[in-house]
Length: 382
Ligand SMILES: Nc1ncnc2c1ncn2[C@@H]1O[C@H](COP(=O)(O)OP(=O)(O)OP(=O)(O)O)[C@@H](O)[C@H]1O
Ligand SMILES: [Mg+2]
Image (cartoon, rainbow, N blue to C red; front, side):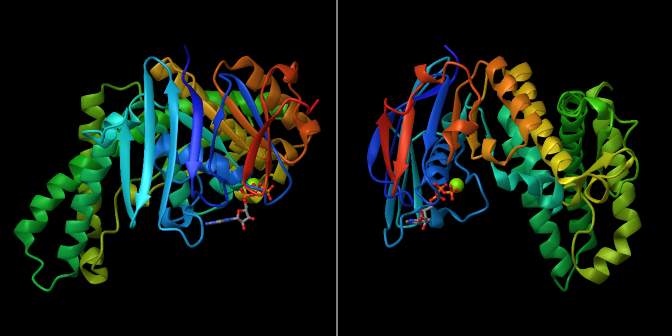
């Protein structure tokens, strides 16, 4: 059976009223007026499955106002059945997997893939570089849990390195040991991200071409670092070789920036500063593409991420679409619904307007009405 959430329940999560819902393995619709709790419900489900907020909020903002504890829980069916739960108590997060604390966070997250679409995803193209780095990193975590510890190692070394650069002693021997580790972990992250972008590129280009057939081949994406043009280092080269190349490139960069780093007392190179560059007709996307084309690019990136997950894990991710249909013009929404029909995974869709959902045979799927945080299953919607 493909991965899907069978039941979901929450307590004291934002404005959601305590209670449990049963979900369908394919489509589930959440309908309600503005401000009733549709995004909160998808946020709660996203958090349960990924342990990260769907949007940029602090974990304590997930609790209902005035509350100090909250819980989200659900039963997940896939290759195995699992019960997941997260409770927040006195600012601490407690996880349970099948009723007991998991030994490692990776056990909790294992084999669970989720892709969310929200109107805020437009920031992926328009916003700051850290959103694009996060997009890449999340896409890699989804298919390889080891990446989580690699990134943690890198960030740990980065923290030490920054602390040393800030300190008065700035011991050169310690710095050179840190540089060895820094370039090693940095090269590993670079290789992963470059490989991912190479795999996403054809899907993103194809999807964009399906939405804008007259603009076929209009877009391109490339990974941007201070290391110069990395296009010759693509995912098809032997992995060992690439990582060594990247490590030497990082070393060279550190040497080049040595004095500047000492002056500024901070690390000025490394994958924590990189970005994705999007091009439209060979020009920077932000200044040359329209609103609709920007939306199409975001949708293309998400679709590429879904294919990446399907290819690498042989599973269909759970898709959470928050109010996306209402924002799309006819050609985007017809593409989106055709695509959703072609996929086989579970889809949770929220909308203010049921008529924007262009799926055939909608009647066979559950419809939930949201009002003041109360989620009720309705059969009388159609
Ligand atoms: N921490 C919180 N505790 C309690 N209520 C909250 C909390 N944070 C937000 N809310 C309330 O939740 C409601 C918003 O819910 P949500 O964003 O899920 O609405 P929505 O149905 O997605 O609306 P829209 O269609 O406008 O996007 C608002 O009324 C807001 O005041
Ligand atoms: Mg909303």
